[in-house]
Length: 223
Image (cartoon, rainbow, N blue to C red):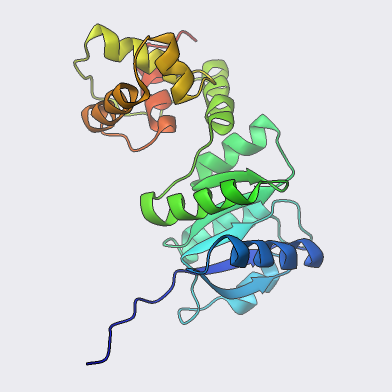
């Protein structure tokens, strides 16, 4: 009986620096053998020529500053023509407004180009299996932007939370890691995971960014 093989998730890379692109492919191959490279492109225009329904990637690793068609235009085009393609930004740009704009456009993660192999592996796995990858750094950037500018995209339903859940929600809107929150609340990391998962379900959100959006919208974090 012939064993059934599961197709490998397909990745694609769009970056105008060929050396970096090739290096990133090599790094992906080092950290995991579970992915296949569908194609690579120099910029958005090149991507448009190469992508089709046959080689449509599950995840696209994308730079921002590129000639002819930059990362913002690529994400906008993908949202219209290939909405199922998940996007992971890999860029040297760390400006808050750039990161927040990309997150609002629907990208599933944001990494700096000097990313460590371990974090790259975690990001790929998380996006393909959970649908997103947000570091505490990125969450902090988004929360700061929300506190400065406000936001109307959070859930509008109220939810009943106990005092400890409210305390956790407020701390989740900081740049503290979950382990640091556990220490601050004098709880174990496992208990904090329980609070997080309970609020994900109770507030109907899927990530720490979702918690932040809810907290700002409902006044748990002061603007």
